[in-house]
Image (tube, rainbow, N blue to C red; front, top):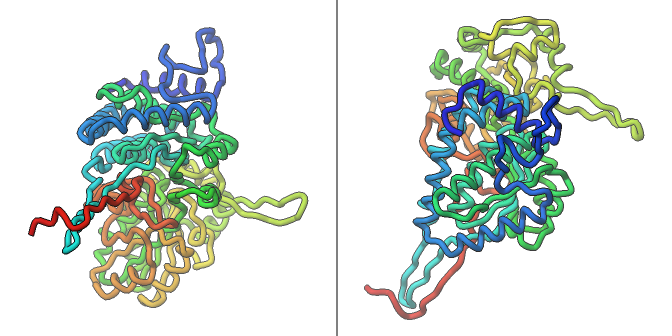
Length: 484
């Protein structure tokens, strides 16, 4: 599937989306919902029970293989991911209507290059007067994983690499809004593993994931670990399952810019991070707190980097579009939620909803707003950025911490003042804290460190990797094997 032309990708996208959603394309008598281009998706089943059984069989197979063999599987997945990055990116945008193909392609290459493999699984030894104790990282068995629509194939592949490196089998219950993309990634992982000498199926999924298939996964005795990358509702359900769980939840990452920062660089970095894949990554900049004495310069720099400055009236009008209110007909209770028709869309598409027409060069809408505004308080996951002026570092930290809502996910700061940087890092308590760089540096894109799309703040694992999907086992040799 490597090196497809744009026309071939478009054809593949249309075919897979139709078949995975069981929607027969018009005038196509050869259509078959279980396959595309004459080939069945490997590891995709009708029922969750079948998927779990297949993943369990795969796990039992790799239990008999060496660590070196596992690393061969991981290397093969990396190669397949690089070769088909463009295909998965195009498929993701076509199915979910979110994000950008070029940015999603870059994310797949990042996953291929910087997801840790078996080198992350390191044993620990302790010796003393009473002998040797060895602690090793063992697999759980079969891991059940919930994946999002924002980074569907990226999360499936990144999770698969780490979980396989740890020696597990995996079963996925993908987000219903990204079935085709997620299951294409499942198929890719299985093709890659089998090509490297592994079992035919090591990761599995269902053709139509639902809440019911998720509940089967939560309760199935073969599932020993649950991993959830998603919104607060699904994370809560996983953490309530009674099983060991890793939860990667929501964030609302604030940015502070003080008057010691390189303002031109800060403006570019913030917009580059905020607009990456149209703000879909949960680490992306969501609101800015800037010192009053440099605010005009920062806004001017943003305007030079593909932004449009909204008036307060335009910002208020847009806020009513991107966050919608619904009234429960039974209770009369009003709830507010992000408009899914705007999430991850291009800036110009969102602005058209309030009658504003801009060119494709405009990649972000910015607006000066009060702290209470929707653009500050809500994680929109759109290329929209609220800007709040503050008088000093005390006010900046106070408001930024409040805007982050205690998620302890990600925060950013542009400053050359070490005291200010340290104070904010201490106060915000986030899993990721990025200084003087775009947000994506926090997951190894233009910064050091490995990558992941499962950032487990609620359960404390942080930037997950292969070792996150292991359990510790201790082996003790009393009074022997200390050789000094």
